[in-house]
Length: 260
Image 1 (tube, rainbow, N blue to C red):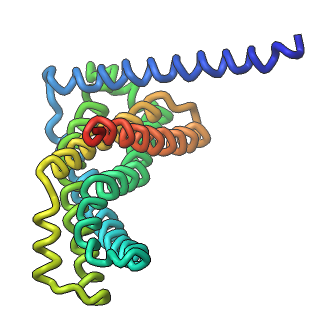
Image 2 (cartoon, rainbow, N blue to C red):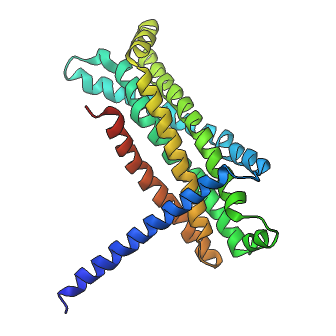
């Protein structure tokens, strides 16, 4: 019996994980379905656009700028070992657009927005504001989840596009100001190397990551425990789940877009 205890624990853990995945999938499907059914709370949607999009621009811009600059330095230092320093513009562009831009923006959104959504909704649950919505014949999923998920699906790809541009610009500043590249040649190599498929894949990743971030915040907020401890646990769990799912989704989408 002692030897069977680890197997029993593993089985219980597996069942719990599968049950959670099913619950999250059902929750996400319900949230998306409420987007297409009236009524639609336009004011909540605009507030979510402001919170997720406009107020995230400073952290997204700074993160992308310094990442692009650091990437240019790293590629130059690594390329110098093989006399391939000239590839800095091309690799910075493809690295930011295909991978670093979407992932970093997704993780920043998870850190900033997912935690905020989870804490806000969990606090509403603890203070019984969600119950008050029900008594007023307002569906919590429609009022709290649908506007936030839709806003994230729309605005995070825009943030990814802006992050890609700022990241490439950061590499341009370092490349021309510190590494001695000709500005016109740097821009020409960047533009000529990027393809439309790279840009489309970046924006699709942004859409997926935004949906994941908003859904995780709403899910853990709606299912939080009671009291301040419950709010804290919901916030922590939402960020952890969003970050892991974003990285997993990035791997899957990269495999779909760029596998040969």
